Image (cartoon, rainbow, N blue to C red; front, side, top):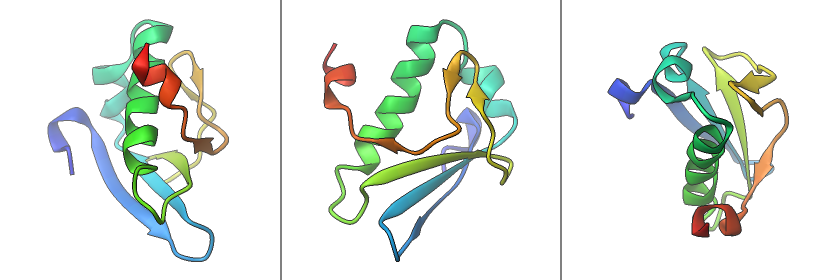
Length: 88
């Protein structure tokens, strides 16, 4: 979807309004750095996807597998909308 930025597949599970975002391995190399940059990266994706009526939470994967961290940010659990982070 955003190939050069390392984003792989984005798909939604119908039963519970969860959207899965599957990063390619190089996503971390191209988008990590400071904790603030990583937080903005994650929440810009989460807040954009949860703008859609049928998506309430986002789960991140790395090469199809659940991982604990994206740089300094714990991505092991699902994320809900947090518009205040993007507004900062």
